[in-house]
Image (cartoon, rainbow, N blue to C red; front, side, top):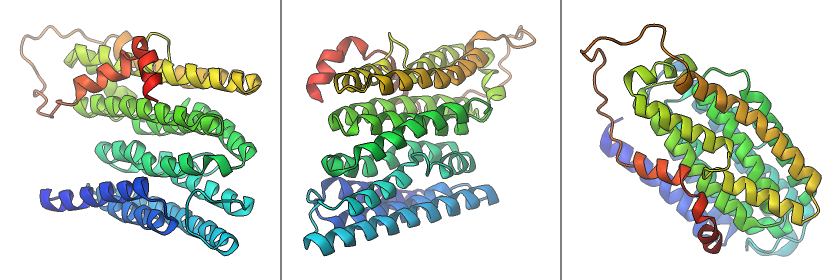
Length: 347
């Protein structure tokens, strides 16, 4: 894609999301979603091939259905209340419809089927935008309508998402599919805490985005799309292999790393609200995610290449990819735990 066209398309995607973030009127929120959806499709089809075409079509159909459901919920709410404001939603039917529409946009279970397929079909850079930036707008709307949503429906979706995100990724070898299932599980954690403390959802989203961006950038630097190609990393870029190990364990939520903060806080919040069984269940299903992250770290940093590299001459070309954002992202996604009190005061 030519740079001017890419700039126009990206600015439309960004302005669509910002429009959703700053609106308190349902119609402008809906228009923002539509702008965002129509502009992201050329980005998904950057490398034009049948797989990208199929992935973009799946994405378009799912998001169009979600937009239709959202509009239906908005109209039902308008007929009953006579106003377009976001914060006024007394009717449970409209509220449930909007929750389902936003869950479809986010890829929460049981509307998760498009996420792995679309992420696998598009290039790495497009997959990165899909699993990070595209989550901001729907979650901001969920944040605003959290008080009027049905907590039982949210909890059911959270449990299913955490389970699907854990089970689905177990047998995968494709990195994009693994990250897609990881995204579904993280969305489940965010939704679980939305009813009790929506601000914690924002904290989880921020840390999730930094970890996922860092992971995608490490994979893109190495041009890896499968576990097999990832296992060649230590021979070529040993430092990158150890960084992948750190970010993977952080995504899994292990204690000395940043990924532990949201899990710790969400479990704390759930137990405080008499949901100890739910918290225990979610902590146990997080082990499934940890298992497939450990598989990746094992393939990357803990196994040796069949033949040791004794050649003095580099047989691969040096990577020319821009890595300016990588160091800060890695630092945020691994070293934030000591700053937890400060992070909590910010959120």
